[in-house]
Image (cartoon, rainbow over all chains, first blue to last red):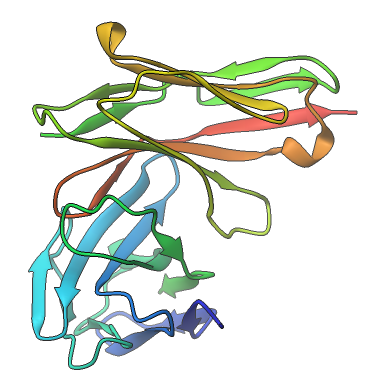
Length: 115
Length: 113
């Protein structure tokens, strides 16, 4: 199993550009999520999904869109990048239903810089 | 709302010393899980332990041990006989019923050889 994979590993954007961060898992996990990590702030939840076709907002959703058309994939879209979105982005997945409290498996991260 | 506080921003110890990383959580849920994750310099997040709100027993795994006390809302992590490979950022997190993790701001541990 590859686990949770993320592409790209690094990305530089100009303000106003759009892009999609890809996330895929091959563990048949129902739950997937996106976090951003900023210095001194830990990881904060952007969006999450409890299954295909179901998404919801986390703590810091503004400026990001998600969709979940398959169990395996959970892309994160930046519609109009801003310097405040410069961060390291982590995708995660976990098995089981809501409330199962299983540990989350994290991807390797995408380091995004917005100029 | 969930809140996790890791008051220690950075800790430095000399190799073979013991070190305790503090974590204080705040939640209104009666059922919750607490986690510790390790982020080495390579950047990935590595799961270390999960404890539920009904089990206050301490746990030991090799050089690692965890002390969960509901009376003080703390879930502290101790590394015994620290090694250089323990140098990393350590995150404590609280998980809600929706499976969402609320992270503390992390403690950067540096083990000096």
